[in-house]
Length: 307
Image (cartoon, rainbow, N blue to C red; front, side, top):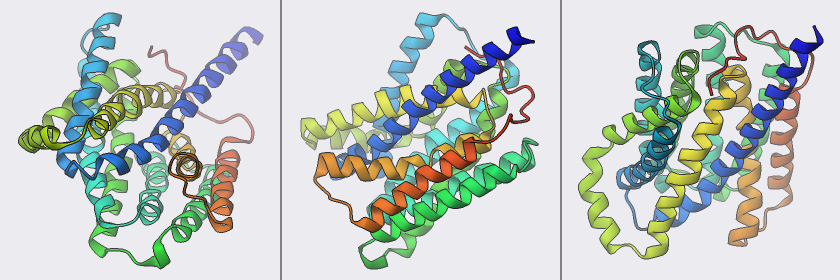
């Protein structure tokens, strides 16, 4: 009995570390996107990011000699690749050109709630009361952060709808990805999902070439950064952790991102947050603590060896 419990504890700690890496890098992406968006259109920015990510992931996949994913994993890989790596990145880039960062963060953070609802329904993960309570607290925090940074609440209706679509595609991508991780490793699922997203964005190749030629070097380096770290590394650590817990719990952890974005914008861009923004960030963190706390979760089959 003791020999079974210890490995599960170690796996959970590794998964939590992976989640931590993911949320920090995804938060840093907001700063990089904000800088690069001045020089790159939404589709070109998404393709540039995915190309850089595909190169890094391809090298890792070849070095690990993991081979092609099993046939059973491909429906989930295709779904996550098209929805999350492809459509999500284009729509989010577009939405952030129409609305301020606070409004975008508030609307996109509908995504984790959709993940929990879809995961409970389609993946039979159920609806644990502690998870739902934590998500409600974190969503309230995300709303507070969004309101505090939303320039008085003025926002483009088109931009809000685009960010809502981004939240839907994000949730759909996660729910597609979870079953694929039962059959393939985190590296396989992430690598081929990124390949699928890159292929879907190839129509933006012309604008990308034109815009790279005109953009300053720091803007191009931002695109490369987005591909290497928030995409190649963070999506792999996300998949690693997702294979070891429920989609609902993983979605809830991303509520930390708005709080981290506030701190990064404060440190890097000199944007000093007000007390309302800080209060919202603390609510986000408190909600994640609630959703991941409690007793032993009923998650059969989630500790799957996929590495």
